[in-house]
Image (cartoon, rainbow, N blue to C red; front, side, top):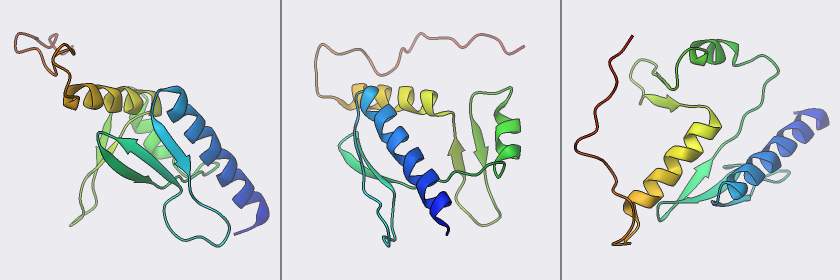
Length: 122
């Protein structure tokens, strides 16, 4: 991998960590030159989540096109575990909601509303 690619990747990793921290999560960039493993470590819901970050100029064009008119995407290759793909802001919101729902706080908001009704699909 060339120096420009490494710089681009590292810049993206730092930006992602900053967004995660700004959203109230504990996150740190752990990748470095010569390191093989995840790029970011994220504390979520009492777990340490390993995050791999990939940046491509146009490499994910089809995924972005699929997400253009929907909020989330589930993709799967044959004999592989499905992947859940969401825009980062929604992913951070989901992470916050999961953290709130599992927090042992008696006065916290409920995790779900048994009376909630989804609006009819159009």
